[in-house]
Each structure stands twice: as C-alpha cells, then as structure tokens.
Image 1: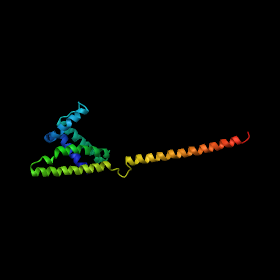
Image 2: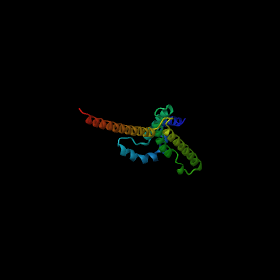
Image 3: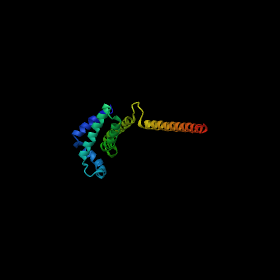
Image 4: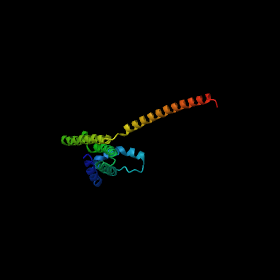
Length: 171
C-alpha cells in the first residue's frame, strides 16, 4: 500500500514533468552545484532532474510493491521524498491561508510517508537483521577461537606428558 503513491506519481511525473518545473526550480538550482561537483557531464536542468526523480520513484515503488529489494527501495524512496516535499509543498512560503493549509497538509502527509518508508527500510520481516547476524557471527568466531586455544593447550599438555614418560622408560 505504501508503494502505490510512488508508482502513480512517478509514472505521471515521468510523462509530464513540465508542470512541476516552476515549483522544483528553486530546489534544483540549489543542488545543481553539488551535482556538477560529482561529475560535470550529469545533466542538471530541472526537467531532467524531475524525470530522474520520477523514474526512481516509479522503479522504487514497483520494487517495494513486489517485495524485491524492499528495504533498499524504501531507503531510496525516502531519499527522493525529501526534495519532492521541499519543492512541492513549501507551506511556509504561502501568503494565502487556503494554499498554506493545503501545502501544510501535503507536507505532513509526506512526512508520514517518510516515516513509513523508514520503518519499511528497517523491517527485517522476522529475519535477523545485518547487525544481529554480524554480532552473532563475531560471537561464534570468538567461541571457536577459545575452543581451539583450549584444545591446543590440552594437546600440548598431553604431548609434554608423553615426552616425559618416554624419557623415563628405558629404551
């Protein structure tokens, strides 16, 4: 259910990004220098960035909906939601009370979606997470090393006793 809005809006914005350009331009103008620092050949025009965001939301939404790589997909969708929310619903800039209220509602809705995506990204579906598995593997390795050390000491003591016994016996 969480993925539906990303699939629909991603497909819509991919087909028709022009309608979002005026709202997105202030945000894309801020990130353009960062993108150009990454690589100068990456396109930085507003319409292309809107299309890239839309395609990411469409693919991420489909991945989340189908359960394929759902945790990384949820993280990617959460990352795309931040600029989308900042560009699309800056209620703090509205002078008209009705527009301010509408943008505030959508801003809060997106915050709720962000929370849901972060929960989906953290959800291990009942399976142990990476942190638990790594800790468990480390503990298992520690026990194995301790066991090997105890065994080596025991075998060294046996070897010393055998050598001492062999020296005392007449040949």
